[in-house]
Amino acid sequence: MGAMFPTIRLCLGTVARFFCKRRSLLLENLALRQQLTVFKRRHPRPRLNLLDKLFWIAARKIWSDWKRSLVIVLPDTVVQWHRAGFKLYWTFLSESWRPRGGRLRISKDIRELVFKMVAENPTWGAPRIHGELLMLGFVISERTISRWMRRAHPNSEPAKRWLAFLRNHREAIAAMDFFTVPTLTFGVLYCFFIISHDRRRVLHFNVAEHPTSDWIVQQLREAFPYDSTGKFLIFDRDAKYGAEVPAAVRSMRICAVRTSFESPWQNGIAERWIGSCRRDLLDHVIPINARHLKRLLSDYVRYYHEDRTHLALNKGTPNVRVPVVARGRVIEQRRLGGLHHRYDCAA
Image (cartoon, rainbow, N blue to C red; front, side, top):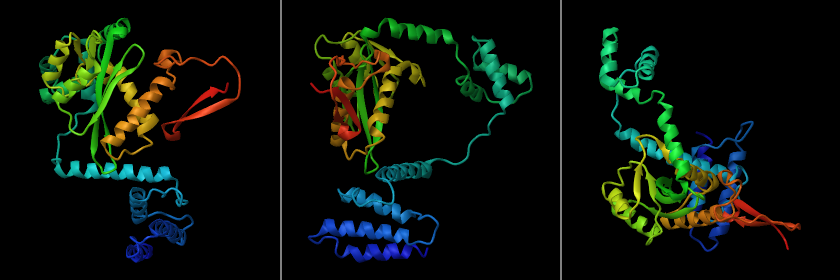
């Protein structure tokens, strides 16, 4: 507690001069003094407490040159603090409304027995397995058996047929999906996109705070104008689609292919694009609002189509990037503000 009072006194002493003309200079002076206060603490290694972290999170939000004066930690560490704060904020909200209590877990032996019965008797349902367990003296509810049956190892034949369908019709298949992105103010934005299976090309994307089925239908009209539609459109059973989206898909003469419940692997192309977008862009940037996120995604889609190589395309790009034949000095071109680069040979 003794180390917290110098920091509080420092912040209160600067508030009165915060809005003067030399605002940027005062902010830089405050940032350097705050770090000096941390270094003066008597520890083998200076430790940052909660007030220090909140100070830099606030400085990042109100001061554009905060990185220039930050020397005690890396700027990426401040971004991680903000993400941790976002996680704690929503965890607190969810824990506040979550009912307490719960049921007892069944033993591992019973779970293994349920899995064995499912594997050896593929036509049995939960009532039949429940009856066998009662005959063996195990007292367990039928609903619990139903829940654990969904976790049993499935038969591989349906999966093989599904993968064969994806391979044989990839030129005519498109997929759509949603993913969420947290904002600087702890809000949540929904990103909608449609991707082609043939060349992994993103046909359309958009951002909304509260997407509805009517909004999704409008996105489909923009993604598939006139006669440019494919034959199949894969999407999951999200409640946001409602009954209007499948009806609109059928009216566009597209076969709507819904994935099974809790089976994201059936829409693997879309799921992999979400993972690439997070690793390449969203894990390094915190969007401010929907407009900012849409601009970032627009730059990323351009980089994804023209510059980024893909293993599934034999190290090519969706827009068929031509390899350089002539030799010369290698020059780099910044992409996504310097997060990535493209390399070419100078003429």
